[in-house]
Length: 291
Ligand SMILES: [Zn+2]
Image 1 (cartoon, protein in one colour):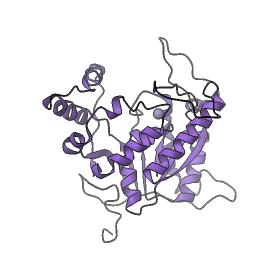
Image 2: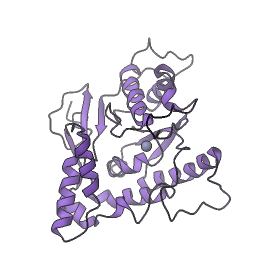
Image 3: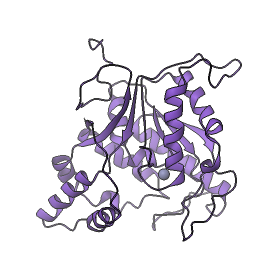
């Protein structure tokens, strides 16, 4: 179960991993906390699909549902919505308050309840989410961490989140944080691009991130996914309102990427089974023969 804040996050964080496990026969469910209805158009070549509009919250919600369905198909995964409303990325100094009713403002118990129920129904062995900082300073990403952490710890406890007629308690066995955008990866790809005489898209990114002194978290688990980059790319392109096919995500030649950085990284945040770090498999310790 891969929990994400907005439609498109599943395609930019750990996408090739989900495609790989789905291809290997794992049941993969992407859970999207919000409808992404406050995302602006980030792709200059975006054309609003026929019969749709993008000027209203409802219109955007419908477009982003279409995009999400296409992305899930590209990855070969199932996907479902928690049904919360996108908080938008607050900008300005001081930051404006979050819009009323948005995901970032929903109290934890209320925000985690539908995910707890979903964990009890889907019964995942492994959950992925973001680290406590959100991995990116968006209130919905921080909230996504909070509800995932809460659901991972509470879903197995019959005395918590009691729902009449609800599913039986279920305890997932491993919890991971996505770390695909590590400085180590950005630097390695940046240097390889420069070494090949290509213009790297990551120079500014590395500088601004270094200037903010964001502490790097530890990657414990590297999953080999280069064979699934094409599916990841197709999923990214499916989010046509958000992802510019001529932009940042596509600036690195794929053979160079496969050569320099063929993995996606994770931090093991909790395990209820014995495992040895570093790992190369999110299911290490869970496979037949491991126990
Ligand atoms: Zn997001």
